[in-house]
Image (tube, rainbow, N blue to C red):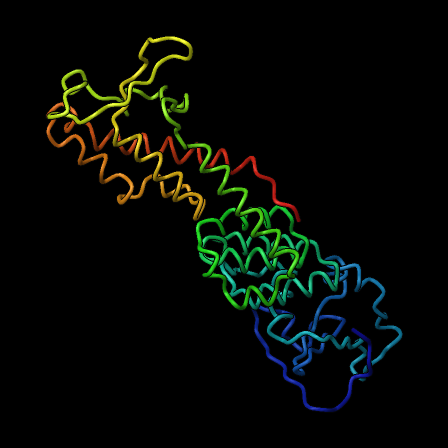
Length: 318
C-alpha cells in the first residue's frame, strides 16, 4: 500500500447510508483498490484494526485535492468492502466461500489484522467447510499457521477416501504437509483397528463390560437352533465364563477392524451394513428380538466412542 496524490481519473464510488465509508463526504482517508473503487474511511478506525495504518500521513500534510490522503491497496474492492464492514462492526456474513476466505486471510496476514484471522477461522469451522471439504480447510489452515484448525480438519479428512482429494486443495498444500496428512491417516487407521479387534479366546475388556448388550440370553445360550453359536469369554487365568458373546458380534468386531484399516471413520460402527448380520442372528429368539434394535444402537455408539478415543491419541505433525 502507498499514499498517492488523488488523480482526476475515473474512480468508482458508492453512497450507502448503512455503509458510511462509501460516502465521499465522510472520513479523513481514502482507500483506493486495485479495481479503482474508493472508500472514505476514518483513519482512527482502520489504524485501530491494523498497525500498518497507524503511520498514514495526516490531513495536514495533504496528499489530495480533497485534503485527504489516498492509500492505494493491492486488494479488490470486494475484499476491502468486507474488511471495512468488519472494522465498522457492520458485517453480518454467516458463511463465505473458500476463495473469499483465502483472500481475507491473505489480507489479514499482510496488514497484521489478528481479529480478521480469528473471524476467518470461525468461518472455516462452519460445517459446510470443515465437514464437507476438510482437505481444503486443512490446506488453508496450514498456509496461514492455524495449527489447531489444521488438526481438526485432518480429523475430519479421515471420513473421506484418499482418492477423493480435491484438486484445488492439493494446489494449496505442500508435498510435506500432504505426506504428513497421509501418515496421520495411516496411524489413525491402525489405532482404530486395534481398538476394536478381538483375537482368539480374547475379547477387549470394554466389550465384556457391556455383556448385557452383546451376550446371548439364557434362552438361546448354547442352543444353535435358537440363537446360534456363542464365544465363551473367560476371566484371565481362570475357567470362569464372564460372558457368552454372540458370534455375530465377534464377527462384527473383526469386520469393523478390517474396514477401519481402509478408512478410520468412527461412523462405520453404526452403519447398517455392519449391523445387519447381528440383527439377523437373533431372528429365532423372541426374547432377543425384542431388544436387538436398542442393543445394537447402544453398542455401536459405544464402539464409535472407543474408536474416536483411540484416534484422539494420534498426534498430527505439522
